[in-house]
Image (cartoon, rainbow, N blue to C red; front, side, top):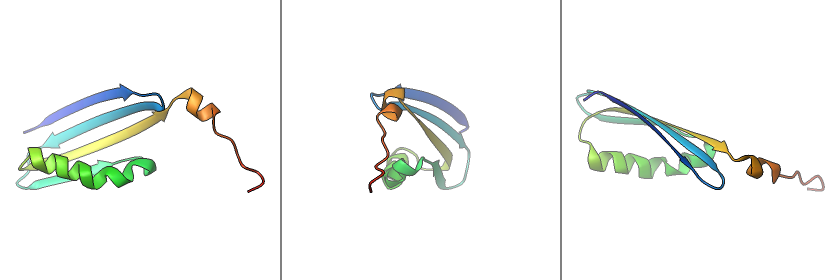
Length: 80
């Protein structure tokens, strides 16, 4: 079991870019590299991988590229 996959999804807030790599391994070992805002999803992602795979070393990398309009909407609260 060796594989590589990538995919992207555009939303109103930005673009999500996934890269997945897997190699043969005796046990299931999954690792995730997620942006800080997405780290809370790691447990759920591990569960989804474990539900579909019994063995292998899986590395998943997620990148988030915010939409330009989202960046422009950010304002610093100087009074705070």
